[in-house]
Length: 330
Ligand code: ACO
Image (tube, rainbow, N blue to C red):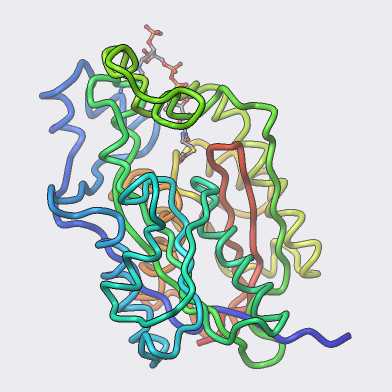
């Protein structure tokens, strides 16, 4: 059976204007620029303005992706937002994006795979297009993590930033686009990274708020251990499915959580660190937006051209992980 070739026809990203530097955190909590830089590589990140929520970041990134794909919102058959920070707990951010972009009747849904969300979203969209369900799907990875981090918890608050990246996924020239896709999850590790309260298991009460259980809680070392095996595992599997070796990859776009995780993964993928696009120093960890923002920046800088073989690879809460090897389309 012949499968359609599916890939990204247009990409755009958006980060809010407000810059939070490590020095800004020095004024708020017991931390230092030196600690944050040496342990993570992060120097600054962007925080959304008070009147911006996740759907607003999505809209900005989507407009650019549509423009780059030479399409309008009327060409889009489905809006899929990958996020773990929707505007509201109930009502998909995708529906708000539909309204703000002026789309009528377009189906919409959100997907939560945390930081692997962009890769999960592209995979779902790719499958739907291959199956002939839709022609053009708008996939957005977007987060307003500044609203769910505890600004009194130095273990977590310095790591995250806000942003969005959007991709128009469509049928593409034969042999281009997604060549190998691999997704995974380890649900048994359910206490490593989560917001303990505010869901159906433990609705928020005065007590949960006082205990700050409405914010992200993370066992950093456990996430680190997971990440350094999950990233290479996903990338190596996707390369194998694509029939591609790490030597053939022009670039790798990893989830931008921590430079030490990326360095460890590079060794296990047997690819030089120079092939890994890194911008976490300026944006921190933007969860489901990070891989797309990195891709968007590389495109803007002219670092990618048609036919380049690249890998996207990520991990996140859940715990989830995934990778897509693709031949760049434009
Ligand atoms: N400033 C100063 N000191 C700090 C800070 C801070 N911001 N944060 C922690 N410390 C302290 C700790 O309290 C600890 O002090 P102690 O020894 O007195 O208890 C000390 O620094 C060392 O802490 P460690 O946790 O051992 O530091 P480590 O080298 O493991 O780095 C880090 C911590 C950066 C969180 C690392 O474990 C990491 O990056 N883990 C992965 C996190 C991640 O990627 N999360 C998100 C992925 S999924 C997603 O994106 C949703």
